[in-house]
Amino acid sequence: MAATFNWCEDCGALTSGHGTSRSQSGSAPANCNWKNIDDCTTAYSSSPIVAGNNSFTKYQYGQFSGTYNQVLNGKWSANTNVSTLATGLTLKGVVTATYATPSTTTNAALTTDFTSSVAIGSGSTVLFGADPSTAASSTLSSGGGFSQYLATQLQTTSSAASGDMASIQAVLEYDEN
Amino acid sequence: MLSHLFICFFNDGSFIQQTEEDISTIDPVRSAFYDVAQRPNDVVLFCVVGNGHNYTVDLRDGHFEIDGVRFDARPDMPDDDCEYRLIYFRRHKQIVIQGKDGEHSIKYHIGWQTTINGKNYQQIISF
Image (cartoon, rainbow over all chains, first blue to last red):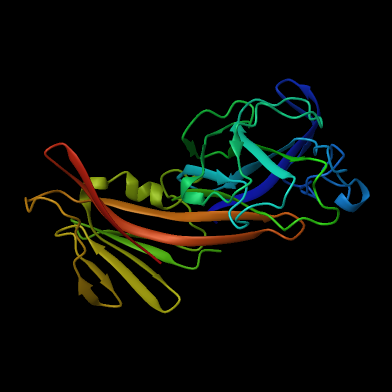
C-alpha cells in the first residue's frame, strides 16, 4: 500500500493549538485558493481580495496514513513555477507548528518571501508529528501523522491589477520507504 | 499503487520480495522495507523492477546495473576497501496548484553510502 497522502487545512479560531475547523482525510479541503474568507470551501470568485488588502492566512498541511517504514526529508515551497508575481502581489509563507486565528492583517510570522519562485530543492524544511501543531521530528514512523503547518498569505497593494493572478504551484516534497 | 517493486538479496542466500501490498512480515503496520532495514549489514544486492526495466545496486563493490548493463558511478573518494550501506527511498512531490487540481509525482532512488576516515560518501541513481 505504501503511505497515503491527503492535503488538509485548518480554519477558524485558535483552539488547543489548532483551528476549530479541520479539513482532513474524509473531508478534504475543496478550495485551497487565497481569498477574503477564512474557509476552504468558498470559491475565490465569491470572496475576492480587494487590491490593498490581504488574503486570510491559510494553514495547509499534509496527512500520512497507511503502511510505511519512514517518511522523512520534508521540504516545502509555496511557489515553484511563477518567476515573479505581478506588481502589487506578495506571497509570504512559513513552515510552523504554531497556528494563529487567521485574519487579513499582514502576518509578520510569515518570514519567507515566495513572491519569486523558490525551487523545491531550496525549500523550507518540514517536520512531522502526531498533529501539525506539535510536529517536531524530522522523521515520521509508522502509525500515521501530519506535517507542520504550511502557512501562507497573499498580500496586495493598491497597485495590484484586478482579475485572476497567475496560477501558483506549491510543492510538499518528502521521501518514503 | 507502486509502479516499481524491490527484491533484496542477503549474504546467506535469502531474499525479501516486496509485493504490491507492501507490508512488513515483522511489523504489519510498516512497509516491506522495514524488514530489509533490520538486516542492513547482510544486504548483497538490491533490485527494483518496474515499467519493463530493472535497476540494481550491488553492495559488494558498489556498482550499478540497469537492465543488466553494468556501470560504476563513484564520487571522488579514496579507493579503500569499504562497506557499502544501502540507500532506498521514493521521493514524492505533492503539488497543489491554486485554482486547479493537485498533482503527485514519485521518483525512485537507490544507491549506497560509505564512511571513509570519518567522511560520508554516497552515490544514488534515480528513475
